[in-house]
Image 1: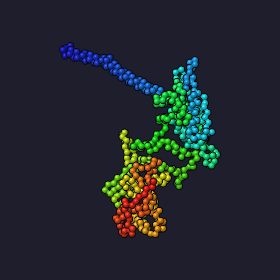
Image 2: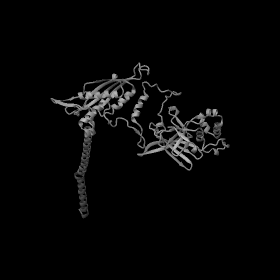
Image 3: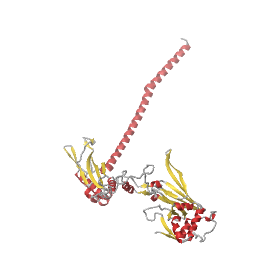
Image 4: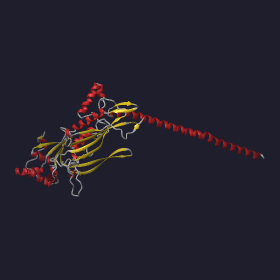
Length: 492
């Protein structure tokens, strides 16, 4: 073997040792280290999950102890020979009394109320520990007779109570003899199956409802118990309704209440499917649907004036729409109705505004849904709009100068002819101020009718710029007086 061969052999042996060392390091060093890191990461993830589950369990236990458990009906618990029994006589008696008082408060006739409690049972109830049921069921059969509005009021009060109870079944029958007010009225035969729960290890309190902390702190436990007794006797129950059960008051974007949830619940009786006749049908056979009157939801929000042009904005808070009114210097009225469409794009809440229509008068609702209202806009004053009731005859007079001139000269005819034509030429007038609704139950919040002298009415309904009309050349025999100098008498 010469020197060159010996060098090659040494290099080959070195390469073999390096390869064997790399394989050994990967197999016995790198692989175990990687596996240990993966195991540590998995253990850390398991520890995080266990901590999250522990926190969740603590939160659930806290919610159970502080929210759910006080909603259980009260009972005393005794253990005899390892068997746990619950004394539920107090809960049955007081809960039955609450049901009876709520029915009376809902105006059901006392003679028609029948409440039948059943024995407590644990049938088909999950168990915990040594086969101890997690709750005990108290069932009540309830039979009453009365109108639908009474049932609505009862259910409204029923679901306000902070108790673990529910209506399992409900049967409502229309008596055969009750075909109208003259034959038995509008009473219904109502049967309810109600279930209330007594949880495992319940509170052993002397009242059906839990004590109110505010009353306990201010007046003591005896005062709280007396308050609960009186609340049940009056059929009121708790003053604090359960959250997330009943619908809340509907509010607009400015957090102003525009519809009370109590009023909407009572509207259910207005659509009584048991006694109200079916809705009429249109000519094409489609059912007629009556929509809500928009008057309580229409508000004048803005009035502005600039360079002889007056503008006003009316907000429709029911449909989230708005009406823009513009009166130019020559008195031309333009009314535009806009819609506001809310949508979400890339997680951002946006609003799109578009125009529905453009007219020369105000129009709310539709004739097909029996909530149509129309008005002429006669003037936009400093902070109010002057309106006139819409009429087809008056609309024809306003469409051209020649019919208007004829209409204005009619006032110079004999009085009997003027009185005969006046109702068709001038309708009832109203003032609608900023902040007022078209109609409102609150005093001072509605559009107001006004009473004006006959000459003043004609001045208000005429265009502002008669001289610019080419068809009106002659000045009327009796000059029209300026509107600002005429007395205006408001109706109270």
